[in-house]
Image 1 (cartoon, rainbow, N blue to C red):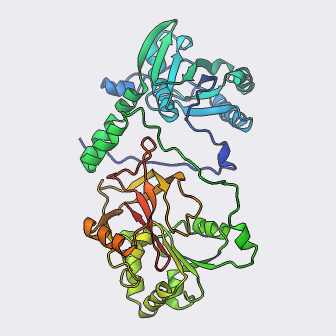
Image 2 (image 1 turned 30 degrees about the horizontal axis):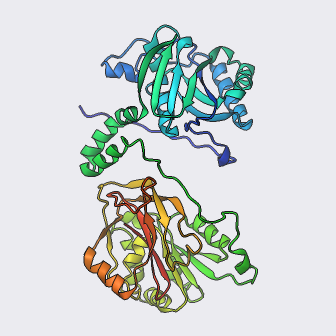
Image 3 (image 1 turned 135 degrees about the vertical axis):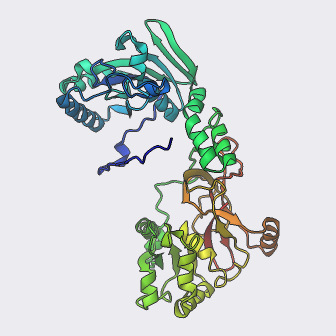
Length: 463
């Protein structure tokens, strides 16, 4: 049967300090896991994931048992967050307590030593009920203080100690000294992702789906680990700002482009005078490029990529004689800097006839995965003449990639040989693996940054 459309409602709230947000990522320091059971031990199984697996509807579903207690729960959690008492938090929802603990273990890349002896004799109900509640992780030394705060908000009879996070890969659940369940976290994660994997194989490129699913079985993969090669607190722009000279950078945007505010802030902190320039300003003649030392084309989805990745934006430049001449003049001027990010990169790749030495730049086509990609990749800064990455060699960081048309289309060998022979190719940033710390080839969309030495033009390009 074809399932009906589902209404998805997302809620957002302002966060005063993102450094104090709590995630499901567990810590393996001396800790305690506490279940706050707002179901008051009812453990209803109606309409749960467990019932679905057995093709049953069930009798009674989860429900709000006490509205006042639900409000007390919210107030208590906010108080514990303010007091810095929580290490991790995850609501009990689809799949019940056992899935909640498993997902927290996935996030923390650790094991679980759980004890459900206090949750009643019906172990299936205790593990799979989707009654309201949450699991919180606290320091063992803070356990009594945390329980006292919960009691002050009327939750004393809802709190149960359910074990601790431990180092390693084992996920173990016991009750009264007997092992109820034991499996490796890695195996559980593969099981947990099975349905998504099968759906991806049908919807997307099955080869890409298989690669991603296979990676989940590699417990030795340390993930995306950051390494700094410089002092992040050093203000490298200070000596230049002190001279009073602030080069003007045009922060260029078009309909559908975003992140220009963040881009302007980054250039401002680096010592530039960032000016917001919309394409409508250029087309109407209200603003020109003659007074700018740098140009940065921001990311987004100009014209919804209807005419291709960045191609509509590029055509608005190429098909307007005056604006076309302005860009050509800018690119031919010595000592100018141009940066294209995301959709801005795609747009600039379509300006090859205006940018000296860019004749062999590739076109951007649909991702190999055949889907929109939004993911982090681990990159390492390599030695290059890039003006933007000076002093950052050997730094490893997570780079966010969001696009549907990020694959290169060109004749691979001929371009590399030509660029290297001319001395135009400089790999400023390479995709790497945290395990091998060597450049790696991925079928998903990832990014590199390259720089042409001759005109100091910097363009971001996917691998």
